[in-house]
Image 1 (cartoon, helix red, strand yellow):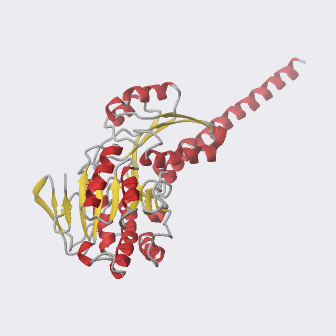
Image 2 (image 1 turned 180 degrees about the horizontal axis):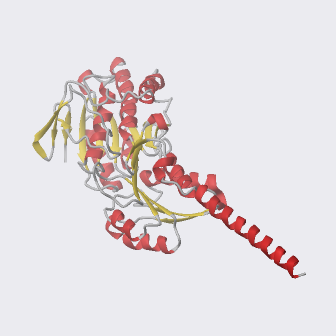
Image 3 (image 1 turned 180 degrees about the vertical axis):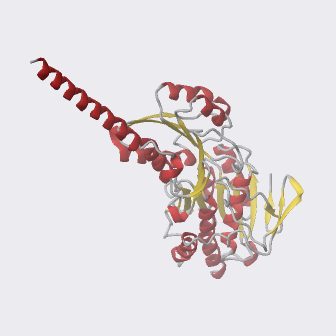
Length: 397
């Protein structure tokens, strides 16, 4: 009888050991059944930038359902990042995503080596040493800016051909937050897209020196409309510029090109088209990696530079949204598609190229000759084009 008990006990031990081994193996090979995910936003979903980023959270909820618990912190200022990070860590987050530019995040990542920290890039990451659990990412926004410029150029050309404006009135305006490389890169690419259709077009830029101020952004747009700008775009976080264009177009032809979020609802008569960075591909891939206990960069499809990743149209990280067919010139979609297909085919050297000279606004001795061309996001996800094309761009602080 003892032998039977011993045999049974040994059998149970063997089965239990095999079960534990299989459990450990499934954990190693990617069978985690639950994650806790954090999102920290620099603003809230009422602003286009954060709304656009929150779509990635929605995609996570849709894909994983009850396999994830999600915690969100909104309106977190850069210098107030520590408290919400520690709160999310205490709640057991396995991975945290940030859309703000706080420089505290890499240092906080050191305190929690078992949590993956994924932040939208805010500086040149080439050669920068960061903790192994700290990652940066961004869509190659200049591609969408260029294509949206084509849509604006098509509209301007239509207005010239119809005699609504003269060639020397082909002036676009841009409401910009700060004179950072990211912002300068974006509005330069936009103008290059416009000039690919209307070669005489020029641009006026006004800085608000804040990312999010409805009143300042709207006022800046109104000022440029009063100066004769017929298309306005922006790199700021509110709907102010779109509202300014919508109000102005009641009495004069003014159009708006959006970024991050379609403005067709708030500016149905003025809104032309929108470009957006798609954060979903990276966020979903990063969560897949943590689910399977693999490195994030082994799962993400993009241009990988260490723990920094970027991509454009070719990987679905950038897209165009809501072309307003009631407003857009005939042939706009075809012209946009042609450029998008060039990007998807791997051609990216045609955007920052031409008979132009650029000057660094912070260092007059730092110049660039674009006859040789410039490739954006070649080694880092953060845009680095920092030059003002002084012959065709006027900055008005």
